[in-house]
Image (tube, rainbow, N blue to C red; front, side):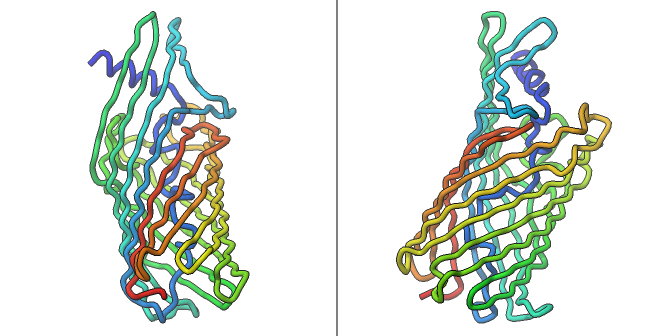
Length: 318
């Protein structure tokens, strides 16, 4: 117990160490590049998507972007090596209708999550090494998007969505085994695609996602709003094979609010760059692999994502 207490105290001294507050619910870069283009009414039906993502972290950066590898606790200096792994399975149950609202076809979806997290750390102080490792698996928070509209033309796709993240994941104040963030989030997302040819083999994507959060359970802390900007390029090399690049920036627009916040001016941010390779295994089943590296983080963790996405269509694509 003393070993765990030392680790928790040391980690808690890192500003924004809680994954529940340093980032919003939405994780940019995880989706496949063309996933924000809503299918038309001619392709109405049930779609199943599944995002399988693994996040690995061994670096925390302060508000100046410097890596933190030691902490001062009174006269004691503790060397810290964080080791955090998070695996997420995120099924998406999407219904595309043949209904139109404001000239755009209407769709909605529900996306629960299953999370496995591993919080580890290696501490060194007074010539003693302390190792800490704790694994937790369970249900995370759930995104419900009751409103998603899409407009299209031969050369472009536009979409607009409104969603709500429900705090269905386990959250306890001060817990090191939390699987949810402990607060509600309202998300507005707009995306656009431009196609360079009639077959839509080459596509340029741009998207913006805005999140506003409620008060975190039991903490009296309201996280600041988050914005994510994404840009991507997708190219089909054949009827089945697609490659692409995906870049993003995510930042907090304002500091967290609450009596427990020591410095409300801290606003985490991070950049990311990823590559994607996707293949239509069958005319209805697509598999997409992505690797994403986070860069230039401030006041938050910086790591890398490995993602395998699955898409199953209600009818054959070709």
